[in-house]
Length: 343
Picture 1 (cartoon, one colour):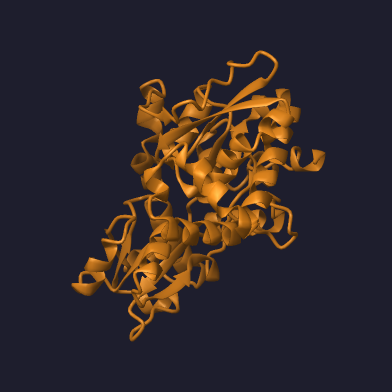
Picture 2 (cartoon, helix red, strand yellow):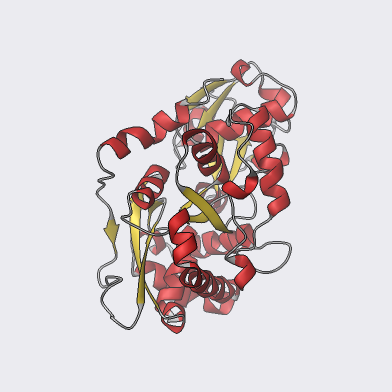
């Protein structure tokens, strides 16, 4: 498998060569982290725009949880996971968010100076969608077939490959085509251009609301890997440990607020401050919100907990699948419990 293709697809090297310059945006009135001299400023770079997926941060801002921790947070919308990684490594933000299948290879194989400190998604937000009459329930069933992925060489293609390797199958025996990340992917399936396609939580929620009958196979069923998680540069982790702990405490309160359905309107209003379009359809937004809370609820019941056993098994699988080629980098160089241990 051409394991380096995702780096090129993510634009990691080309962006760093360009000095980490991106067109990114923050919400009007969200403020600068230096706007209040009594508060310590931190900038959070989202993986992609401003979505319900990052509502814990928006709620913590709107409810004043960050201020209670002595923090001022600027939330900046990125243009893809590469934005979050490269802006943080270029010191244009202190906190980013990305899945283990992205951060671990960058750390182990490319020496990226980042480390994960809190886990948002406790299970995969990606599933293989197929026709209920011919459901795809095992990776062997799409060997020799065509599966749609959100982007070439990105997270979804890597997960699809890992699912095959986990079952002793050859990932190159699967034809992957780009079908995108929205509900238009369904047309590829209807037209017979693909036998299934990978969907993510947001588009799955939309398809369910539209009454589209599909079979969903979560990628964690065969390739469990920690999803979007908060990371920082190693120096930031070492030098601003208490501030990062405050960030996690505030975001945990944000999740707890989100978990109470009685607060849904307030949560969606907080998201609207950053992206009104994301919550225009309140019924759909509520569906996405409930799904996000479920996605991020750990077995411990403590939001943002690190599942270290899951990280260890995920790294082993990534090495088996040659997503990671390095065999020596220890897990503690990829993910740290230092912040969670302070809570």
